[in-house]
Image (cartoon, rainbow, N blue to C red; front, side, top):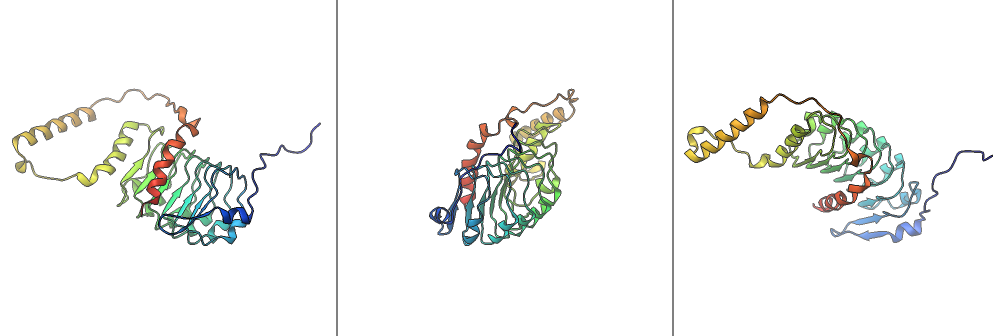
Length: 260
């Protein structure tokens, strides 16, 4: 009879030498520590001696936990943890005041620490492909956010404090079990198009434009007056197999994270 608990995969051991050899100079002259796709199961403590880096990539590994010692990376502007097995984040994540880009996509997060609201310089946040059923309203404190990924979660609503962030240009909420998915996607799309919205008086419109606008208004009124059909239990197969779409999403977010 076998005694004791079954152990998980041992994973690759990262030494300080391996870590040093994984440092590259990024396109903007910063230092990037790339430990992605290395089969790591435990956060390598040896990299705490390399806290001068501007970018840290631990994506596509098997990490289940990020320790509080992550706070030692005070210079970090770019942190990629996508495609791991993270179930929670340490409160210390809020000390990384210089973070511009944070990718947590394709993990097992069910909650977010309130300390995330302290990342005042954060511009891009990817939380897609997780197990989140709610988003804290405190994320509305991140006034510099321009892009947020919330796709493929278990969300039923998005806080107004997040939808109305002043600099937000892209909010991806696709494939969530919203009570009315169409309306939620329209809300997200309106953020992307808000810069092209102008208000004018009817008297300033030509006959053709006025007729077009009136037609759109009539369509909207017709939609608003339609009685909603009985709700059905939503089905989201991608939530069961997140890796099927994670790869396609990551390259776009990585390129965006590199933009100044």
